[in-house]
Length: 326
Image (cartoon, rainbow, N blue to C red; front, side):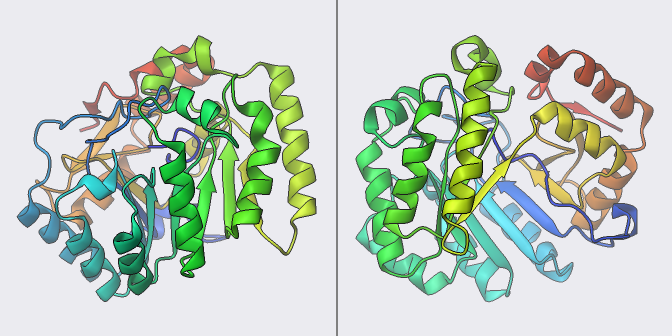
């Protein structure tokens, strides 16, 4: 899972409070925790099963509720989602229900047969992680990663007309390649390129001194992004979030996102950088979980802890030490 984007960033509609929504606008669903890589920056410390992962029956009970609540947009990530035994069955259900779907993957399992299946699903997008313009930088960050496989997946998806995006996580040792990586995305024919400051949660928090770019590096990084955004205007989307996770938390205290973040065992987090669980979709109806999510943002313990994190960002390392709000 990518530590640049996968906290809840979907806002409510202009002029409306998220408290007024009867259902979320967006679900970020980590379908599994199993992964073939050992990325230094992984938000969830993926790579293995976690206790209580949702069974097939629990998954489809959950998905029927997603459909009944008319939730318009779902993003599936992991772990590595293509390693989930029910991945294609899940995707078929979501798309047949008319729900917009994005898949976030390392791309290493997207061979020719998978590309052909992806064409039929008409995804909102497929987002593949490429953390450099060269294998040497990508594979330093993504331990056991195979740059060639991910690059080839992007190339073949684009060739078959699948809306494809690249996500790039900046670190001390790859941030200098962002301009080349954007050029590469354009040359490959990608729809978009996503990046932003690395998030200090999960495995990234443990490796923070090794990973976190210096301020001067970030200045050059954002200058390059501004230049590339102008260069590729009306040709390719260059998306980047200019703030770090602390700024995001400040904003979300005032305006929580109309979205849910669901992890493989059904737990529903308020937001990636905080440890709070507001419910579990295996144990409560999805509508009830949504109500609990909205109430949780008004709970003193959530507000107080978030303010502590804002003052002391080292507390972000506790994001995966889950605790129930209620």
